[in-house]
Image 1 (cartoon, rainbow, N blue to C red):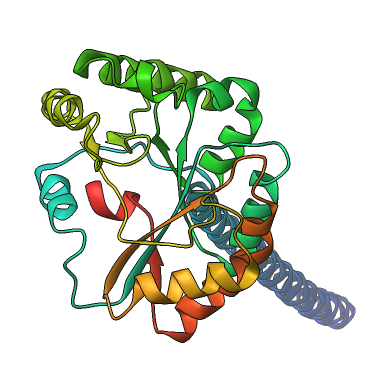
Image 2: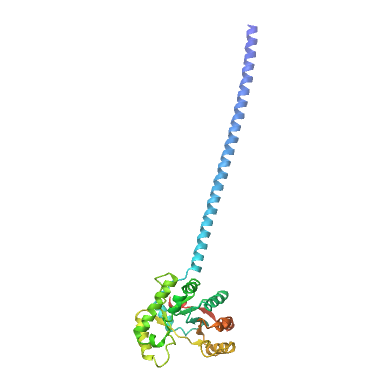
Length: 300
């Protein structure tokens, strides 16, 4: 009995020792599992945070790209002129303004030698002008007309031929010249919906020889949603033999103290002096406190 008891005591001791080892191992295993679980959860959280951050960055990039695209579109794609009732009223009151506003206009172009120089100067000054183009020159230099349009300048209509006897043979002839030139502009810029709604009579609306036809043509143009505009200031760059001095003097005298001025100049092939003097013309107007607009700002 004594031996058995001793053996039994030894066995019990061994069992106890084995149970302690098992408990210890179990605790170690549990701790390892918990540690692995914590690492796993931490890794998942980190990945989820990275995914969320990447998603936010991607969304921000998309937003920025959209904004940039919209800004670029707004800057580089010109508008299609839309004649509104307010536009009609604005044209009737074009010379009435409490602010000093200058509308720079060029007739008889485009030309291959002068118009590109003028465009470069206007771009340097960040000024948008209005070009009253001749249809016959639009056909010759469509790429220049497209450049004018895509640069944000207003493309208006000066008739097709500039041959007075032909243009003013009747009111319908005036409208026909407008329509023919309008189609030439559309073909040049590649937009068949384009309609400038704005005509400048060759030689202006004044004079006595063609007064009756011009008055009839004004009404006919208006019936077809076409407005007309002359000028109230000019450099006389197409009269006689202008000089640098005469251009500036004529500009100063005709601008005078007016608030709103529509300034007549020309960009046909013989007007190198106009291109040369354009910076001085613009500098003078800026010094006098004028801001610059084109007819997008008027008829829409």
